[in-house]
Length: 354
Length: 162
Image 1 (tube, rainbow over the protein chains, first blue to last red):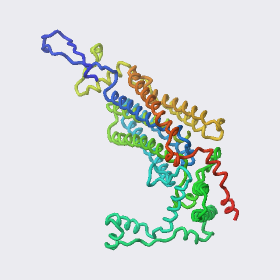
Image 2 (cartoon, rainbow over the protein chains, first blue to last red; image 1 turned 180 degrees about the vertical axis):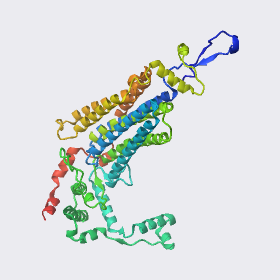
Image 3 (cartoon, helix red, strand yellow; image 1 turned 90 degrees about the vertical axis):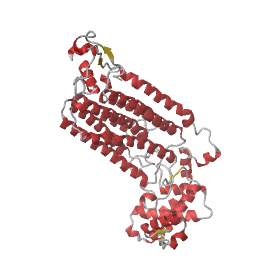
Image 4 (cartoon, rainbow over the protein chains, first blue to last red; image 1 turned 30 degrees about the horizontal axis):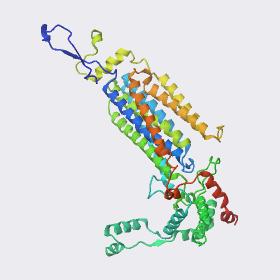
């Protein structure tokens, strides 16, 4: 930018003394900012459009949907989201202070602020990872085959529950042997091929029957109730005159949906079958849950990637001497980091509180 | 530097053009430490924390408009826009920048707005006309689900009583 705007001036007359008529090139900036900062701002304006597209599609999908899950249906925790907001705001302050210290040529102080920013950004990602884990453990994934979300308690849902219960009746005794067998079948193309190579089907046991035989005294009160409703569900699914509304009852036992207005305090589906016995992993009904999961993981995922890139740059910068010469670079990464904070400022209320 | 004042900066030996520019910009604006300062940042930080608490307040039972979520949404968006403004103006130093800031931010913001508006007919209204097959697997509205739940509580009331 500044090179193109260079003006040609000659301070002295041509052919005078030792100047030999050479022109002196002098920089006269077109825009009063450095190249790095200009490029960062141009990049940020493309980023504005990128996140506007994501946030915009989230908003129109959310308000165009017939039903959208409440935060507690999908195991979102508002306090954790608020804590993460606080962490990002803190990191925005520390990076600004790193810049101020670098401008004042206090390199070691700047490095302390930079390290603190790195730690806070890492904390944000750690909390995000913890939140993702909570989703995954409840069968909330962005897509099949891991996702166990069904939109409505219909017969498809019923057959998915039946299939999972059948799976539990043939649970392998040794998970490692089962994995080895599955690999071998895939490698040799068939169970017969695996058998030829000495890998036989691992022994299985009926995990549901085993649960039935456990003494009541070794279970918690919640688990005793859960076991009873699990037996009820098995009976319902086996009965020839099952009704379609039975599926709604089953879905409510697997993961109760908090009633409208009663979604505060302990509404995290703590009484569901999947919560009483986490190994059950029964399919759940979360109306609107699939679209929710897609948008949630897309938005937070892209944001997390941006956080990760910022952390990478901070880590590299921590190896530098952060004196006044580096102030420009710190300012630019600071601009990027504030933008990442900015996106989260909108993501937090949209995803957690709407 | 004063003798070059009218012609702009000249690259000094051992300095890149960008650094020279940086120096000249700072000298021209006399803003080496004119803005910023710990006090101002702490103030902005406290304002941001306060605003976050305000939008979090809509989630608490004390929020008076619990039955009208739209009020809460509008409030939260207003709070978010205020927070975004604070971050942009003070942390990103836009408050102290020259007029180039409008050239870069306003077109991008307008494009972003158009982008979101253009999604409404295709994406936002996609449920207005759906195929029979799709309607079969779609989630149903909340009131229907509540009705179903109310009509089918038979067997488990029994089971719990035993």
